[in-house]
Image 1 (tube, rainbow, N blue to C red):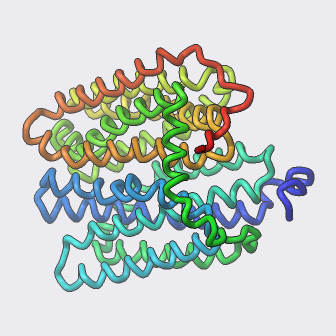
Image 2: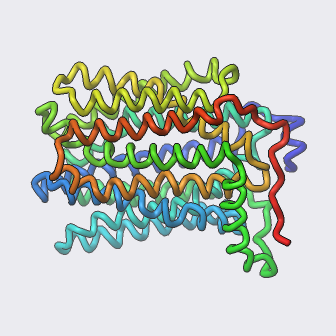
Image 3: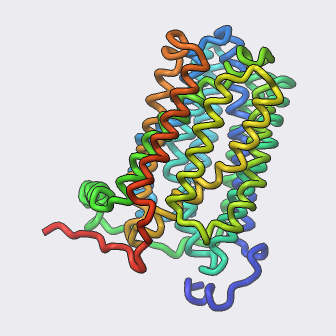
Length: 417
């Protein structure tokens, strides 16, 4: 069915076979990811006696591949058949999980890092393929509603995921938890077989040598736009702040609040519930507020909340601040997404996102890598205050472009002579 026909006679969103399939696949993948995340976190914490270096390496293993493969995966995903790409990525993830499980079983516990590392690499090819199919199989007027469903799904698992992951690990242990991940990835691959057949052809050999040109083109386009340059700076600062805070969350629970490491799930659940509520609230007025202001509001709130979490030794105060931060966090997501879409031509949106996203994730990985060293050198209060200050600078970076209005038509892609 062509894109035009879908737009003219769009069926009910919930009767859309593609959306039904992709949502079920996402549910399965989220189960596997959250069980994996908490199994690895709790296992490494137990095995190393809460060694900050070992714990921060978990986040590096999860996010480093995003920095390295984000642009590469997006570019190649545009050239391959998306349905086939997604199925193979899930199958290969499952195979890698079971292979790593064997090494863990025979005594090499350090292999737990590979579980996160390999699946993160493959997701950089799978996710862009999913977005291509989303745009092709969902009618134009239903895109925003469809994306809202995905955001709601992520927020739901922010609430349920930590509880599920902790329960599976506490009840069954590491090996069963890792096996659960492999099984749900296989189930996801089976579900994806139900997707409509690919109508998009793979790229011909004549264009397969254009990767370098496309890569440079994306950077040039971002650099030539003041709005996208400032957004890139905000990405870098936010990445540094989020990375160090995320890597040390476990120590906020155990040292600042004096609770067991399992209490981390409640912090994440409160934050996820607030994101679910905040997403609905922000969506009601987002169209009336420029995206630069939305992003600045989110980053100012992030600055204040991060600093308070670093100083708080009270469980009620920390939970309240986490809830407030979650309420405002959708401002950051909606602001960033809107700015990329409004200030980028359709033919290069993927590459713009591919240039900016690694800036955020790359800085996250860098700050996560140094989180252990920072923990040894400074107090948690000092580190979280510094992270809050980075958020604040990111908000101030929006001031030069605060009054910029999005063009009716984004500037075209400059062609090389």
